[in-house]
Length: 150
Image 1: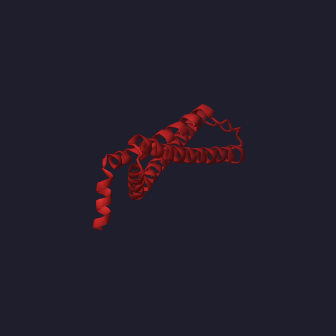
Image 2: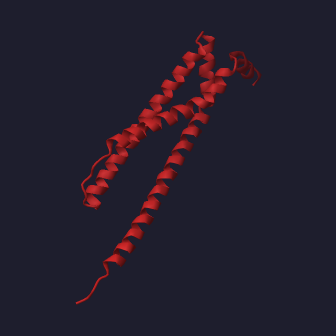
């Protein structure tokens, strides 16, 4: 007959679970920062095109309010598609891991998922519109002069 100290076993198990949780949180934060950097780089990469669009809209008589609405709608769709895709992939991956690897029942957190989608949309729209403010303050003539000098 042997005696197994369950408190020691639980302590070791708790330590391992805490370390795994820390690793998962690190990679989640890393993924969010990487995603934000990707959004920023795509916005900076398309900055010239946005300036061109804004100039064309203004030349055709559009007000700055209309251009802001167009840019907002564009970023809204981008944020919605990326958030929905991320949600579907994460929920599917979680279900597969829970059901096949861990043999656990899977319960999605719908309210939290919806809040994350909305937060993602707000972040994408905000990050997408911030550089557009400087673009909208420029007069179309300044951009056209720069184009003819090059």
